[in-house]
Length: 184
Image (cartoon, rainbow, N blue to C red; front, side, top):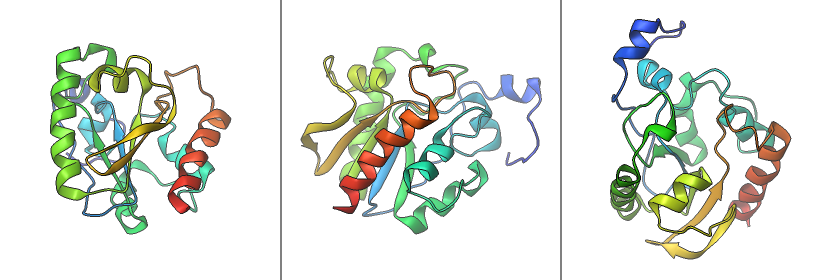
């Protein structure tokens, strides 16, 4: 279902466990990787669609886009050399509902995507999920030390409005650091 109105409670409930298709192509500059789709995103079938999610504003504030795209324009990222996927495919009300085993399985699926599509950078949007999925308990925000199947791995904060540790100015700063690395 691809809707531009606010989903009903029944539609949100029916989206539990659904998926959102990847926005992906070969040789992207950056493949942004969320933790998993929200129920709202699963209903509308677009990434980072839940009101309050700051992904689109963060991309614009950092300079990845020349204006704030809407979730319904997520396919436009491909024209800019960017894509979107998730570690875990299953939509949930909160990423906290995912089991560590799901994140580890999602990492293996993500590895296949990286090997097939060869993005230059893989930007994981969520430090906690990265630590679990990649077995890197001491990882910090920013560039990681090793290439992963040829991709430079960069960990960014989760742009969810529920992430109170990072405000929009903070997100702008760390997303901008990635953009600077991409451009250099």
